[in-house]
Structure formats: C-alpha cells, structure tokens
Length: 122
Image (cartoon, rainbow, N blue to C red):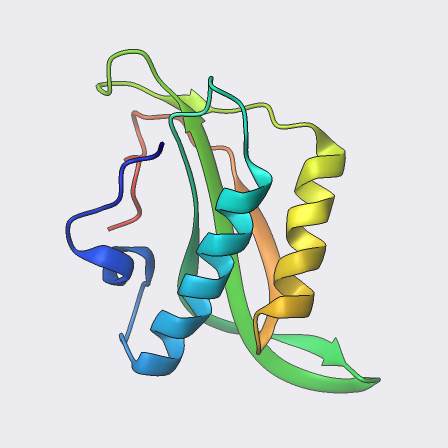
C-alpha cells in the first residue's frame, strides 16, 4: 500500500489546478498503481506537468500535456533512488497513459534521486 499525499491529487499537478487536470491525474494514477506490484517500491506516481508540447494525434500535430512518472525505493525516507523498473513495464504504462488519459502526448520517466530531488514534485 502506497502513502497518499495529504493534499490529494493537487500535489501531483504542477501549474494551474482545474477539474479537468485533476481528472487526468486521477486516471494516470490509477494506471500507474495498477501496473506496479513490487514490494521494493515505496512510491510510484504520475505528475501532470505545467508544460504543453507538440505531439501527433490522428495524423495531426496537436499541443498536449506531459506526464512524468516517478517510481522510487527508500529505506529511511531521507534519501531515495529511482526504482529500476523493467523496460517492458515502462512501455506498458506509457502506452496506457497515452491511450487512456485525454490530451496527453508525452510521458517521461524521472530518474532523479533524493537528494537533490524530493520524492514529490511539489
């Protein structure tokens, strides 16, 4: 069982928080959590970034959202490192997010340790 942040989904959104953006991160969170099963994973979650980037949807160039995936392992919560998830699992999570979360055109995998990064983005 992963901890859920006190501020709820808002902590997983950079930039403006709207009902539409909360719904996107809710769907992405359900996807990430359904695909993760290792007891070594302390926390795995998506973050909806503020940036919008070009992508292709139905053979048309569009501007869409970016989701970063962060999956970490830790022993003491003072430091953490990215969990080395098998590449096929990353590909599956990415494909599901791109197909199931409206408006997302890019998925990133965050490999930043703590420190210097924090576990959450906000």
